[in-house]
Image (cartoon, rainbow, N blue to C red):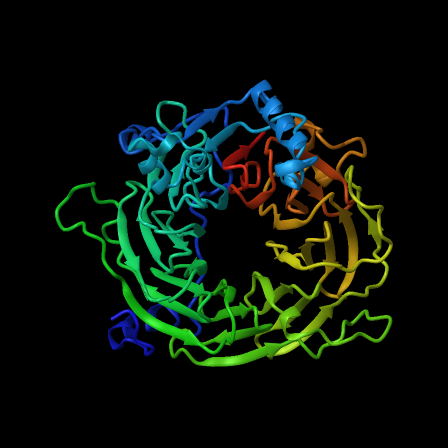
Amino acid sequence: GCRSVHSIESSTSFFSLVFAEGESMATSDPNGSGEGPPPAVPGGEGEEAEDEVFMPEQEGEVVADLEGQASDDEDEEMEMELEMGEGGEGEGMAEDFVVVERDDACACLVTGPAPAAAAAETSGAGGSAEAEASAEPKPVYTVKWNKSDASVVACGGEDDRVRLWKPFHSGGPNSITLDGHEDSVVALDFDATGKALASGGMDGRVIVWSTATGRKLSILEGPGEAVEFVKWHPVGNVVLAGSEDMTMWMWSVDLRGADAEVGKSGNSPSCGQCMQVFTGHNQSVTCGGFTPDGKTIVSSSLDGTVKVWNPKTGECKHTFSFQDLQSQWAVEEQTPPSPDEVGITCLDFSPDSSMVLCGGIDCAAHLININNNRVLWKLGRKGNSAAGVGQVMPGAAAAETTSFHEDSVETVAFHPAGQPLVATGSLDGKLIIWDANTSTPRLSCAHPRGVIRVQWVKSGPTHAGGAAVAAGASVGGGQEAFQHLHDLCLYTCCLDGRVRLWDARSGQCLREFQGFTKSLLDMDLAPGGRSIVAGSDDGTARVFSH
């Protein structure tokens, strides 16, 4: 069954293929140019074949081609909520809402109520205050852009549902809702072909769906508590998931029916094949995945450790612990953090699979080499001066001349094209760009509230002749800002409800996207970086393009 903690012998042939030493694991670019579909050209080839699959939402509302301004009703509702936050029953509510000056989204998906709330409303129990509150849009916890089919986006949230959405499709219904989880959906990932989507929920279940039809392909069970993350192997039909129960599971999934028609005989979901259960962490396994070459697994946990695993045998090859490490840039004696202050919250892999960058709740980031098991550097609560200070956003604290985080590091990212640059974002509102070779901070950019996601632009046209971004580019610079989009740009997702595009060379904020009325919870980029999808606590997912 799926709970075996040993390798399954029948999977040996698969391992010899996918994890063979010395075998090239490079994945071809299915998009060619890497560009997502421009919003000016809705739909595309093959749309007619899927029109009947993407049926209208019964609970939600799909809005496309917004006019760029928040509606009067939304403004009035937000003002009322802010007034309630000044005292009485609504005290503290004001902190949950953000000021919206305009709506920059080109498409918006509004989630519906959770299944239980919808059923109560249908049965006539929807008139009560409780039922009305539960029928409100639920937070969107996770979003994912299909890198192999840039017309498709996936969303999941507190309503226990997964949604497949075509934000640029205007020829009819552009989203379908997938039911199967019994608790919030908190993790999503498309496989390398883009034909399958894996979702992980707080119900401890992983479900694999067909992207083309929305059909359940596999229901993967095993974790005893909530799933923290799901990741596909770079080229294989293998899913990895970490759980709050301190374990990590790996399954082989049969995707041969991913393109089968709905209702065809023999299309019942399979249970997948459990290949390994990785044990050894002492607290929740918060993040992890396969290295880009597919030969190694790395996981991190709230116990403050990063573990390197052999996927063929399930053996832990090395454990990194950072409790006793001093910051390389410490200027004074530091008190060792307590055990509950060392949890790892995020990690990323270098493009050559040799290094891992991780961040934690102890305000530190760590760069480690998993080939020789060395910690290359750690950045703690005390830092040295940055080479420059980026643009400071309105409402943010005054620019700091020292570059170190003062709150939990929530997001980290290697430059995807091999540049010696890494980025870290923290709940202290800072985005810091580091030189990975010298471990020195190059730029510090201040946000009004915490930064929860950082993503580099993987590809995109540069300005003619490679010239630098014009000095006149500014926040809200519109189309002109995107004429200079290049691979030294990166996006941030912030708790103030806004997405920002930054130039990592100058620290200039090239563009600021608005429209959400509450904090952002996740963000992902389309291939080419010219479109962004973000999910919010206000119950909407929005796409920003140019």
